[in-house]
Image 1: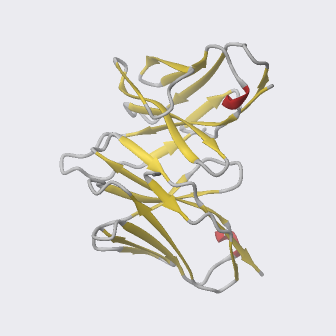
Image 2: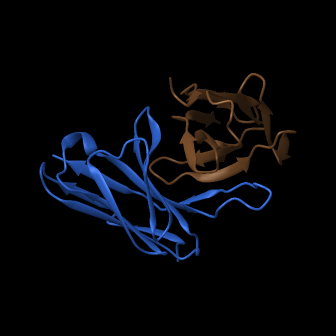
Length: 117
Length: 109
């Protein structure tokens, strides 16, 4: 079984609809992230959470909200979807840095392809 | 200005060739550096971390130049299976990761 799962994998919706993308992980990591990927722009951070009580905005949080229901679950919502939110969305997890400030690789889910018409 | 910039390519090389990618970053306080590999329509996966002294993993060598604020990835003896998009990633304060838009590599028979 995959360590980081995302549902749905594909979604087509209409402008103005509310959409929730879900992410679950079995890695036991405290840190979770939501990104979107657009052609030519790379991955951009939407929100991140360092534990259940900690939620932070990323560089492109407008139009999005998140909920960290448990250590293992981090959901992304589009309250009123618009066409320019059409993108590939990735959830990721990581461990915090080590005591010596060591490396902290991110582990990604398989992505959700969202199309807003 | 983007936090991380990469040549999008594509780099089209024959099997067995050596190919190198560079990536520049804007924040001199950047602390961690990585190369990720992303296959078409798939999630990014860590290829290798980049250490200050440079590091090698089989056919792959990564270098960091803090003075000029760039990192590089060298792939020797390219295989067809190396065809993918290579993402440069940096972070600082260990809080946020900044991704380049990726460099596409096509290895041809």
